[in-house]
Image (tube, rainbow, N blue to C red; front, side, top):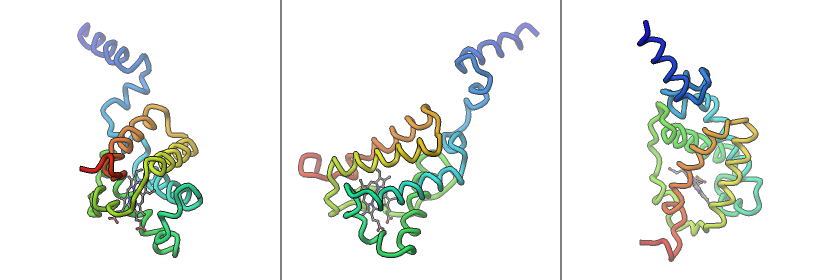
Length: 153
Ligand code: HEM
């Protein structure tokens, strides 16, 4: 009895004082974001933003050429994000180095896409904690995607 009470007490403390947060504790980032519908809303909205963003859309001529191409890119990105945030998807596309090889993606272009992603996460009202976790994962990919002379091995 005493033991039971103290376990709940510690759980509440670790959860930052909120039982709601405590209930989320063991969940994957995928689940906390809202599962597949949320991941697809992130990927679809991000691609729409990228295609409308004059800082970066010159890189995406292929995706912009048809709805079919855009949809293929959205689907690949959704699967990649799903797998990256601990979801059940199996990403079978190119690894990030191969996908961006020869595309001369600049640091500025990467940062612009990251800003588009933040705007999309904000639009979907993703809470700060989950938003930061997503951005940390994306940020960790920068050296693989920006393959400039200075960072090239
Ligand atoms: C921010 C993190 C990024 C992630 C997670 C990401 C992820 C991906 C993925 C999963 C693909 C598909 C790979 C395949 O075909 O198998 C892809 C393709 C591509 N990425 Fe990225 N990317 C990122 C940033 C960028 C940036 C900053 C640029 C350029 C400004 C860029 C340009 C492209 C282009 C042009 C393609 C081919 C799209 C097409 O199929 O038409 N990516 N990326």
